[in-house]
Image (tube, rainbow, N blue to C red):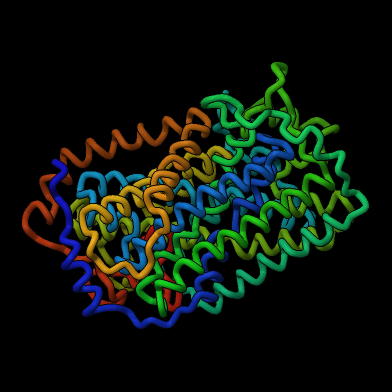
Length: 532
């Protein structure tokens, strides 16, 4: 059952013979990593994190960043050693075997779709609050701007119409065919970093900034309790979503000059940059507006996305509360008197977040491609449109699922569920690194994880630690999804696997050559986890 392992020697040989042109340096990798990382997490989930941890959100960012840094080192070693597309799925197939590779790929399918839904909901908040209300004077009724499904009952909305529509619009673009150049990516990075820099500068120097607003620093404690998802660690498990994307750098290893030097710098550098930035943003938001959570009668923070929190946030006394905002950063600046800049930050999020949705939906279809090419999923999923030459079947299926999630669920709960799949994928990369050290110690490693027998287990422990501090529904979603995946694997995929039938399908290295029906966006490395 666990003996089906792709021949690593052939994968590496193919990589040598058919590698892509190496043009990227460490600065381009850092830009790409920052561009993928900065998104809904910091623009939207700041309010969700404050409701879970209060001012302890700053500690939450540091905890999540620390887990990501040790995971990044593992990614750096294996990506530089096996510089091929496929990332966590391919690494697992080449080291641990088909069964575990299937579980990783299945988890990534879930992660990408739900993450795209979360980003769509985040975009909706800025679209409704900034573009419609501030610039056009249009106020969407609550039943058209919030999903009805939430922990504990009905949240009050009927459908989040903007989130639903943006997911369908991006899906339509992907069906017709779209491209995004490295220059466009760099421009979007510039927009997001400029917006956050302006936010930090204005809030930290504002007369409204006060150290008193950080007291108590940990209103829900460090650990809020198993399955509650609150406290500093519970917030860290949620804010982990704000870092997802750093592994995009690892998938660019095959296009990187001097990968043994530039890949680790790109990975760790982009993470450190984002961690410091995030902590400063959290300090500015809480120091000016305050970030104490709204508590239940039992003295614990109300669950984000819950009907009770929605009811409390509708009360006049919480009209300016950070924890009730759907467009946190723009909201903070408006309250402290910088409405113009706040609106510009809303515009920046409005412009930048759709590209993140595009990358995530694109990436999920690429996961389908790799698994379909390996015989683990039906070939019909990679059927190409005769006119647009895009994988329209799987793109429409994915886009429909993303739109439904975005239309009916709150952003915080979507982020938590997505994080469960991401943490599992990161854990398996660390396992793959350790197994390769034992199985193939003589293989050339252009970058070696320092103290790998400390860093590797720390990555595994960190991922498990954050997973166990997610809310119970998010923790249970991954096993439930995995059970469905196991049924599919044993009833369909295992008997049709190309590897089992003696057909060795090596990872596709040239994005323009068959059998990959859809080429990656020119000039942009393959998205996170492959975002294949």
